[in-house]
Image 1 (cartoon, rainbow, N blue to C red):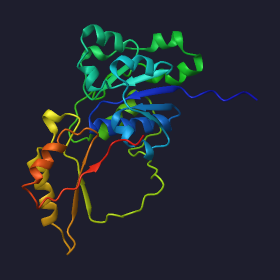
Image 2 (image 1 turned 60 degrees about the horizontal axis):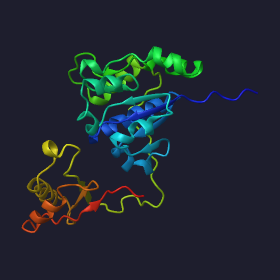
Image 3 (image 1 turned 45 degrees about the horizontal axis):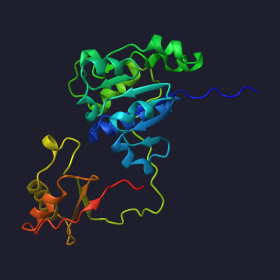
Image 4 (image 1 turned 30 degrees about the horizontal axis):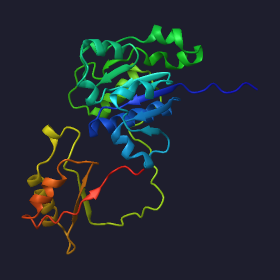
Length: 262
């Protein structure tokens, strides 16, 4: 009996922001459901790895270690994280697009590069055949004008029309880790004031405290809501928020750490 053909191995490197990190988890799930062996690289997905046993998930390698970490995959699909985009001059962009499929919702024109002939020359025929529809899908995910479509809708259209995937889902299967108790904190509301783009999108301490106070005021029973702050590992606003809280007792924040377990 012939051994089954190994699945084509895809590394999917997500952009750094929270929203994009989750969208690329959906992309990874769709690629998996269509027969590819997917490994996800990104700090957002890495914090959720205990809930996603169907994937191998790793944090970002450093810029210097990226090439080594991605060696051995049949195809790398990458929405370059911010620390790489900050370095992407024309020469680096050209080098990256010739080895990795560079994508994002909207990209510069010079990100697009057809990897078909390069992969035809280096991959086994069965692996090349499995990946062929994907190899000229670099560049912008948004390739037409959209009006009311969500980012989920736009990404699914890209996966179907550009990549040729036939089995599509809007959801990502989650497996709760053992030991969790449903509704253990029935009144808890979790608020995250920080982001992947602190200078533009982080909430200032005053806004976070105001949100917590409003949660308490809007409670619909005798038991007040219980707002809690969650910050990423090294979240920059933790210290300033604590200082502001000293004069905003109604907020009564109790931080929750989201540092990845080791």
